[in-house]
Length: 77
Image (tube, rainbow, N blue to C red; front, side):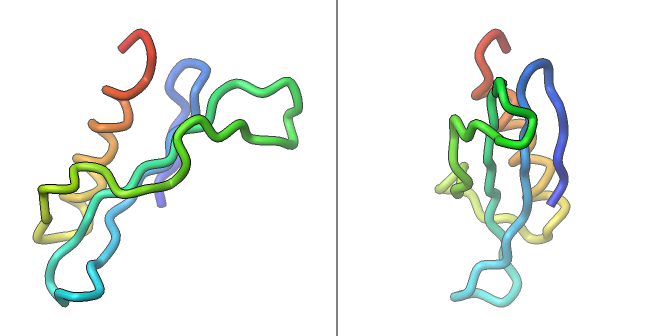
């Protein structure tokens, strides 16, 4: 699961293989905001599937689109 710092936010995004279909993938995202405690991550968007109507043929495609979705969800983007 790639993790990336975008401004004050940390995003995690991934492609997750769908259980019901061996060859298809879904995009998932989690977004963490600034925290006053460096040992605590402030989840502002808990890990969940995004782009619900889209199924991807491979993990990399799902990751790429999950990242785009995460960046679009951030304030000021």
